[in-house]
Amino acid sequence: MENDIMQNDTVVFVFDKYLTFQRYLFTPLYSLVLFFGLIGNLGALYYFIFKIKQKSPSNIYIINLAVADTLFLFALPFRIHYHLNDSNWIFGAAMCRITGTVFFANIYISISFMTCICVDRYIATVHPHTYLKLRNTSLAALVSAAVWLVSGAAILAFMLTCPLTSKENMCFEGFTPKDWDDLAPYSICSLIFGSLVPSVVILVCYPIVARRISRISNSTARGARRVIYAILAITVLCFLPYHVMHLVYLLSHLRQNKHNDLNYILRRVTMALVSLNSLLDPILYYFATGHNKWRFKRLRLKKKRDVYSISKGF
Image 1 (cartoon, rainbow, N blue to C red):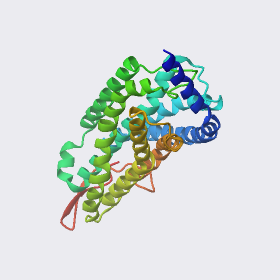
Image 2 (image 1 turned 30 degrees about the vertical axis):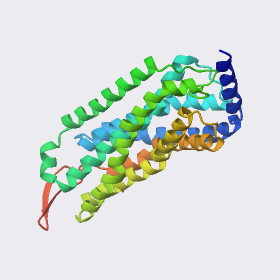
Image 3 (image 1 turned 90 degrees about the vertical axis):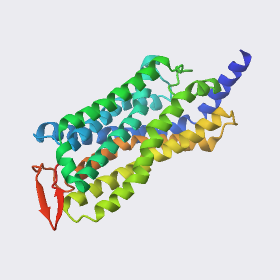
Image 4 (image 1 turned 45 degrees about the vertical axis):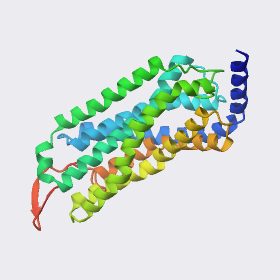
């Protein structure tokens, strides 16, 4: 009992050192992401839902990605208030679980839908005849529903069974060594299935795909390369640094190593980078709709220089 009290006091003392750092890091960045992210994602939802009459599979994936980003952005005002208020959470343990889970779930849902977009563009460019057979919104809607169902089940299980609660008015921070032990199974599963597998696909397979597509000289291939490179850039900038630091931070706590200021600061910085995902995704939508003009062109199969390809169908 006395040992637990000492551990909690140590955690709170260490955390207090970073209140100013977090306020000046997260408050302006989250505010920027919230403002411009809402404009970009709500604009994309309006365009893809109401302006495009005939939906393509990529449209379906982009709509779902924009929905995930919008849900994440709706949780940001709570985080902004939290950091403005010197990391003092006043909304209760339930809202802490909800907003915190939505914050981190967006990472894995976004990676899933970006993977779907890249696979769709690859098939459309390299295997156009197969794409014509698969090109229906029902299949894309089924895949999207599967992503939401799996993610929703994982989120619900985490919210109902995770032992973490807000301590000393902190939310998803200030964990004790016992908290990290309880959190370990969730972190390991999310790192393997939500980060490692998609990251391997994106970072290893997509450059290969891009080289394959580069052999095809048409507007569809160029558009597909832009989409793939945009996803690679978002993954490397926003997601990869966070997952690397989260793994380092998790292993450090599981081994009960002495608190490392540098690891803590780097993890918080990479968390800030994660939020930029919702700000940068509208750039991906822009590339996915033809780079310099947002208009829908009817899908058609055309032959050019003995190479069949799918014309822009975003």
